[in-house]
Structure formats: C-alpha cells, structure tokens
Image (cartoon, rainbow, N blue to C red; front, side):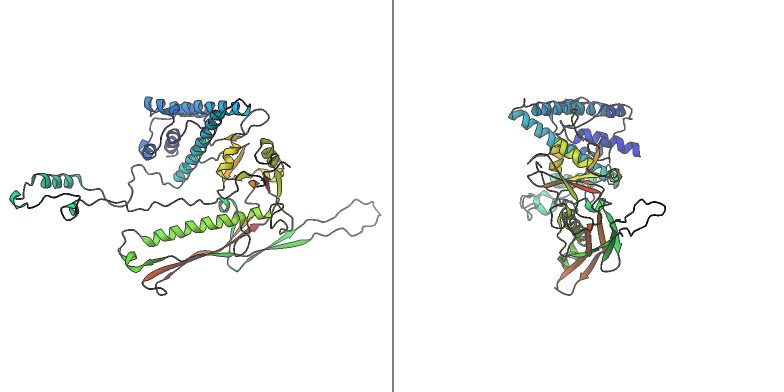
Length: 460
C-alpha cells in the first residue's frame, strides 16, 4: 500500500503544477524503478482544473504514464529557474527576467503547497479513488432511457390528449419532470490554521490555572586550598510564571424546522465550523496574543516586545537580516548558528509563505541555493537544512518586522488546555431557534526562551 501511494504522489506532483519546481536525479532514478500502476483516477479532478505550463505540455501529450519523463521535465524547468535567477543576481536581468523569476518562484510555492496538502490527505487516508461527492445516488441509466423514450415517442399515451407543448423551462409545463441532482456536501471558504499548537508542548489541566517554577541555576563555586576558609557561595533563585486559560466562545443558532428538514446533518457541520474557527483564533493568539483573556503570543516575548521582561530568564533573542528591508542569506545563517547546539537537533524555521518565497532566491557563499523542496511525500521543505513550518499569521518581510522564528518550539512554548471543547444545546433561550453554545478554555505562553531565536528585518 505504501508503494502504491508513493507512485500516486509522484505522478500527482508531476501533474499538479509547474514549469517551475525542484526535482533531482535521485528522483528520476527512483521513478524508473517504479511499476506502472499509477492510479490516475485519483488525480483526474485536479488535472481538469489546472493549466499546464508549456515546459511540460509536450511531455503530457507524449506519455502521461511515465513518471520518469515528467520528473525529467521538472528538472529542466528548475534549471531554467536557476539560470534566470542567477542572471538577476548578477545584475544582467531586465524587467522581463525579473517577472519570469517571480512567476516561477510563485509556481514552485504552489507546487510545495500541493505536495503538503497531498501528504496530509494520504496521512489521513482520505485519498479514495472513485469516491463520489455527496450522498445522492446516481440516476439509473435504465430509468433515464425509459423516461426519455416515453416522453419523446409517447408509446403508451394517446397523442390526441396532449393539449399543450411541454418544456423543461417552465415548471408547470413539464419542468417538474426534470429535477436536478445536487451535491449534498458543503464546500467551505478557506480558513488558515496556524501550526503553533501542533509543534508546541501541550498539557491538559483540571483546575483554573497552571504555575511553572524556574531556577536561574546561579549556584556559585570556587577553588580552595586544603586549609583555606570556605566562604558562602551564591544560591540559585527561583522564579514563577502563571499560565491562566482564556475563554473562546461561539453561539450560533439554527431554527428547529431547518434542523428537522435539512438533508444535511447541520449539527455536525456546525460543530466542525466552530472547531475550525477556534483553531484559527487560538493560532493567532499563540503568535501575538496580549494575555488579556487569551494566551501570551510567542512574538511578544522577543527582545523589545511587550512581554520581553515577563520570563525570569529574559527575552527571546533577536538577530537582524543585515538589510533594512530585505532578507539576506547571511542573516538567515547567522540566525541559525546563534542557537545553542543543544537545541539545534529539533529546531525548525517558522515563517509565512511569502517569506519562504523570498528566502527561496537566496544562496550561500558557494552559490548554492539555501531552499530545497521536499522530495518525499510528507517530508518538509528546508532552508539550509532546517525544516520549514508555514505559519500564516507571521509578519511578511518589511522593515523592522519579525519575519521568522528558529528553534525548538516544543521546548519553548506551552499550550494549556482546560478540559477541551464543550457544547451546550440550548432550545429554550430563543425559540424557535436552537443555540449551540460552544466554549473552549485555552492558555499559552513561553516557558523557556532559550531554545528559540527570532529574525528581524533590519540592517543592524
């Protein structure tokens, strides 16, 4: 089964985007060894909605069953990207070349997002070939044929009895005979969910709050002779931090008749909607919350921010990009190497998608691109070897903005859950409406600033 899904992922990657993505010789070699059992039905819908760049159109027409051919085209497309970007970096580029680089760069980001989404679907076992939308069964072909024959030829109806022309354009003249099928599912508008919770330390509590003790480890010592006096040394100091949950609530209402008559399970749908909204709201608070009835955001602990002095051990240290308005490769590398090696093993880069796009153009001193894509389904893209976690609410590259965090989020940020989500079904307060009063109590804050570093866009 794993091999089957890997084949599907490789072909999906080839079809879903790009005159503009990374690939490698290792991928082509691996693709050559794969059996030709590609489940094209699983990606047909995606193909139908995409417009393919000219760089791979010829390959699609030539052989849509050979992953090696498609991956080869991706390699060629990325070489084109590197050539164009190198010309731009060498000041040889004009406006046309700059636009070309930006267009390809955007498409590479689209491909990476598609790969990440596909990985999530595979992990959740949601990729089901042949699955149909909704729950309405298809109309029987035999019934359709019989109905059409009856209505067109009138085989068992006396034609003299027909008094008026019948058309489907008017309900009264026959439109009722041609009902339309509808998809009994709901397509939701995008709500971008932060990955802070997924990467943080999360604990559940059964009381009103949580207190954390800290030691500064400032015990003193010294060298002495055999008979020398031993004066008192310094003693470690203990500090505390309180983590108090805030409260999220929602109180949507649906009429009793709609709940009774709707063909869709509205209670389940509404519960999913509320849960998604809660995830969005808490993600924003985990990043920038002020602590008033909500968590303390991690960005507020960075040097110079509102809660920089809240932790007994001080603020999250911030480095600079080396340019007043842009990212630089030296700034990113300095950021990564400023983190103690004890925390580097589990460190990740946290930034938004636009910042990742800007970092994709950067090179090290030997001319190698810092950014590398995920060549294996489920593996993250990287910058200088560090996995990237996309956080939609992180600031975008601009003067004095904190555009990236680098470090071990699980060792840095603590999320406190009080019980979880509770729902009170209230049919009495506002008849004839049923209210679904939903509450979640959650808190958060930095419990160790040392495993994290921040990158600020500034010259110095």
